[in-house]
Image (cartoon, rainbow, N blue to C red; front, side, top):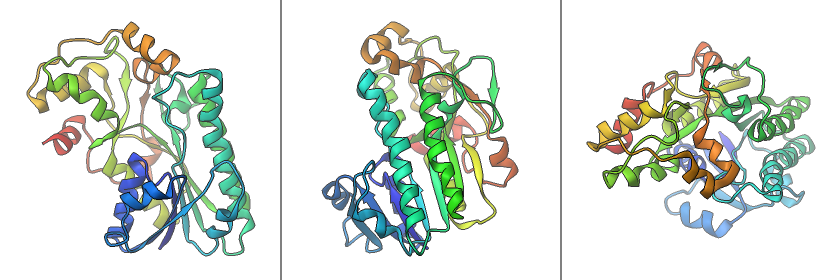
Amino acid sequence: MKVVVTGATGFVGQRLVERLQEEGHQVLALVRSPDKAAKLFPSQKFPNVEIQGYEPQSSGDWQTALSGWDGVVNLAGEPLVGDRWTTSRKQEIINSRAVGTQKLVEAIAAVDEKPSVLVNASAIGFYGTSETATFDESSNPGDDFLAEVCQSWEKSAQSATDTGTRLVIFRIGIVLGDGGALAKMLPPFQMFAGGPIGSGKQWFSWVHLDDLVNFILTALTDSSKSGVYNATAPNPVRMNGLCESLGKVLNRPSWLPVPDIALELLLGEAAQLVLEGQNVRPEKTQADGFQYKYETIDSALKQILT
């Protein structure tokens, strides 16, 4: 299969490109930094990977490059954590997803040999946050900033169906793997100072990186898959439970909580990513036969950390 990947240099994108290469597929990596991509995917190790620069929010020559490719995986978007959510930063976050996806869909519509499938990322932020509610793929959207981002993102992707392209949208939970969010949580535990973040009661809906990549590969190759799926494990945990599992796997204590105010001072409104949560269930994902390797937080953490 010939697959175009945006966001190929990100945490999920790198692993996806590696798997596509391992399985003999051809890959076109559309990236903002070709030099960075060339270091991550050297031609000697990744002979099936082509690299092309592009500006996600602009039209350009990159759009015609989609002709003749079988599928597109769109993972591109500005990082949510790192900078405070000023008004201008919020607009950058929305545009990088909604406008970037719009330009990608315009390219699919314009080329003669259209990709047959678009697999587009979204996030469980779609549902808003709650300590008591349970959300599945049929649940209504929330009303906070992240819900607004996800709704705009998915709306841009939905227009791909007008071109006859099959569309699969994954609302992705917190991705656990060697790096990403987990890497930011490990240092306190390794220094015997780990513990729950905030109240510890907030839900943590997660997915193992390998399961997420498997979901994407299945969506690319199985024409029966379409619509919105929650890319989360079937057993979410509360933050307290996550930290207890981390402590157990690392053989470290889990007793020193990180207070809300510390994260709010550091991240501002962006602190809601870890201080608030949602109990997301992958009802449609399971009903449609997507297979999990890691269904529990203990099995996922053991694979990653031991």
